[in-house]
Image (cartoon, rainbow, N blue to C red; front, side, top):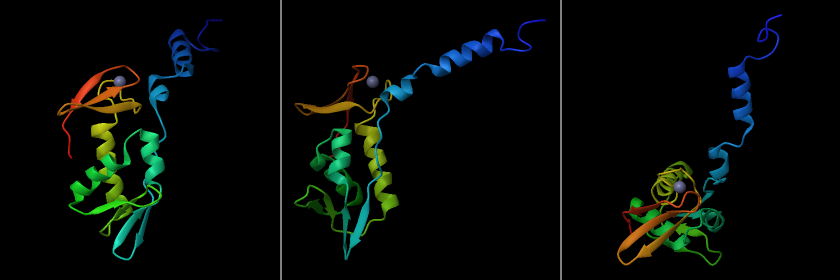
Length: 142
Ligand SMILES: [Zn+2]
């Protein structure tokens, strides 16, 4: 009885083997929740702002400044450390901006890890990846 008919052929076995190994993608993946938005009158409150900023390891003031500048809005952090935007913003559009921030200032362009640091060196901002160690100069938006 020829092998490969009943069982798996060599390629299939390899494929199975590799699919069981933890992939690089899983290694670097962290769960970044969506921003939870609550509209109060003419203001928009981001309820989980502090938490999400902790997860992505970024200063909430920096993230907020980016969001406000992109929207041309004013706002600040409340006593809980959550963002208040002096404008009505939908959850969808806020999260779109936030994703852009992550793309530009959190995700490593080399290995796509989200575990990184953003530091300032003089006038230059550097995105340093904690996964592969790559350093990328980024254009600051604030
Ligand atoms: Zn990296």
